[in-house]
Length: 393
Image 1 (cartoon, rainbow, N blue to C red):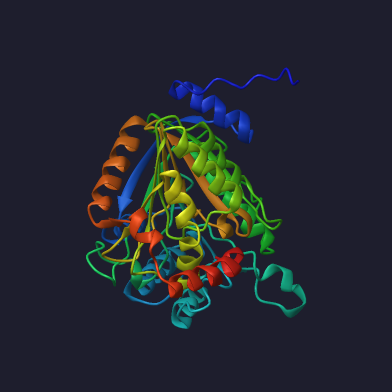
Image 2 (spheres, rainbow, N blue to C red; image 1 turned 90 degrees about the vertical axis):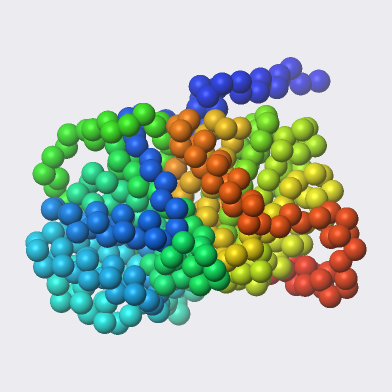
């Protein structure tokens, strides 16, 4: 018989903080300010305002850079700062940003911005095709940063009023958290073959700007497992009261499903908010639906957002902390793509994001367990296809 005792459940915010530090080997850093920006009508103006105010440097990394007015506006703002002598570095994922307008690229290059592509498609490096950088990072003057789920494309413009305006939450950050964001940018920048360890004008510590404590986790996933999986599974394991998940792509693996079921069966309210009729990945939808019956049987609450594509990425744990960043609750984020996650302890932020979640639920439909059990043969065949394709979802 083993003498090993089960660790006591976290009872306070301090307990959760130490639990996450011990499991992930990364300390929390205090003195940060984390400001949520809801939907493109608030996200893009804040990001462009920061770019236009840049005096020394801009580091910009994105997975998605598509078409649209904001794509042109974003490129013009970056190019203007480059022409003014600001050091502008732009890192684009070669898969996600392949449809970026050539005119924007030309404008940036002519202005003197440094442009690099992450893992360009190459026939002899076929093992890299499936492992992308999914991070979204903007850092201005090493003093203000942004991360979350937004891509640079027309789909994100507006206020989630209809199918052409995606639902998103992005975050403006200041304080010591900037060092974590910058490290995530540099790891991808250097892998792309660019010099990254330039002399800094100042090595002074990042100034405290708020009361939030943060833990920054960057993952490089190429072996079918990453710290993102550890992060999500840890949250499910230690949850005592409620865990609220919002994700653009819901495709948990078998181990994560088991932890979700176990949490629900011990009395934790487990809620998942995901896209409904509007999604840009039918494969992810089918693969996610393959998990519904098992999760519903355990009491997990599943909701589908109705007005538009839900692209928000967030996990709220016991009203104590929140996990935000670029990672979805799916196979790709947990085991294939480079991601960034920021775990935040801040009572006001957690309360505000929980209120946003409540509002989103008013525009969502809950999946009814009884109705789902009576789904037809065609739906069950769709789930089978989704199961086969789930590693890519």
